[in-house]
Length: 353
Ligand code: ADP
Ligand code: DP6
Ligand code: CO
View (cartoon, rainbow, N blue to C red):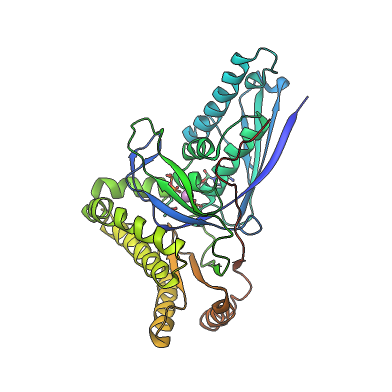
């Protein structure tokens, strides 16, 4: 007997970047961050979780993008499964009439419809989808904040993909991580005029994973320390205000400055880390040129830990921007992803019965 559930979850692209942990096993960050969750119709992970009593005597198994990947050696996966099983067991202990699903074996099949580990936030959609699907299969009565903390154990950025629209991740103060979770700044319906264009510069796996890169940054970059203390807290407040006021000029300036500063801390890391390539830098120059030449902010660029660009712009600018990028990067038209809506799981949503 197999009980199985399939869900999808979208990626989120940060406008105030998370880059640094104060606790590497609980995944507690050195700074708060803020992102936009894209539509499920665009970049997403699709995950099926099956549980069965006949798998109880074997190890849990997982297949990612068609290839089996070991669970036992992946501490984050192990933590997510442990947490979800413990939450199920607590329900079973409180009600002896419930089926003992916490004792069944687990099999997971997950696929991303975009490049994995290439700086397009696959760990965010992947782990958000995993913990959400586990909560469904185990019928866990979790709030959005609970799910966000579960997702954080898989990947920091995943805690933000639990919510739609504009999402903050409060770094929290507690050493246990009880207060380090995401919250919705504004729902996906708040700013329908804002769109995201994704320019896939390279679909290759990055040379330095986000996890490894940010740890070296925390250990070696003095610029990063300055960023955590003096820059991000103020930017978080300014960015939240800009989003609530739908002030694109301020949103765009902070987004570009924060992307630039994140990549500056990568350069300040020793040995240095390079995620941007020549094409990324040309995209920055093109956006800067059109903003300067036209005398108004047409678009904002941002880059995660990889060379791929995300362009945020008002809807009316998109046809022109797409033409412009097609002109500068001939042969690339049609290979990007275009997002015009945002997914949403409202705060307070309770899963299960
Ligand atoms: P990215 O920039 O794509 O987020 P990371 O280096 O942060 O890259 O994370 C990539 C890792 O995230 C993968 O190697 C894999 O371990 C994990 N991951 C990606 N997609 C999924 C998924 N759908 N389900 C579970 N884990 C995933
Ligand atoms: C540059 O969340 O992928 O995309 O917590 O180690 O899994 P781990 O790292 P991850 O880092 C994301 C870094 C970023 C910025 C961001 O999404 O805020
Ligand atoms: Co990631």
